Amino acid sequence: MTKRKMKTKIILIVGPSGVGKDTLLRYAKEEFGKKFNFVKRYITRKPDLNEDNYYIDDYAFEILRHNGYFASFWNAHENQYGIAKRFINPGINIISISRSKIKDFEKQYDNVYTINITIPKELLKHRLLFRGRESKAQIEERLSRNYEKIKAKKLIDFDNSSSLEESKIRFKKLLKEIKNA
Image (cartoon, rainbow, N blue to C red; front, side, top):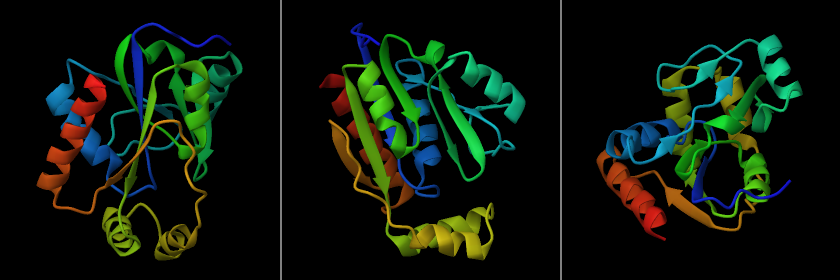
């Protein structure tokens, strides 16, 4: 597969569930909504009010996957996720993905940045409990996982443990820096 060399810049947003990826993306979309392409995902679970995605059933997802519709797809927490090739446009594309799929984009595109959103485990535990999507046992299992070091050509770690207002300002500043890089 040849890389797409048009004026396309991909900004991948990765990090464990609960670190605030969708919250940061929502605020970034308010700031850059017309200037950047915030790529929606296809997901096979019930909609979450904090996310803006396409929700489909497993059968429809498999048809799309089988027909090569996705630039990347993955399974996480018994759900399937996919990024449609046709949703990636020339210009800045911001995509929330599984950290295991960074290489899919680096193989297809020349200009890929990866922002790894992080927070301390205690804060993550608090956020996951507050969200209420998982049982306490599932949360403890999630927190006990050891993740491999992320491998990406242009990796940026972003600590999201500050106040929401401070994190929003720092995240928007980071996106502007990448846009101008």
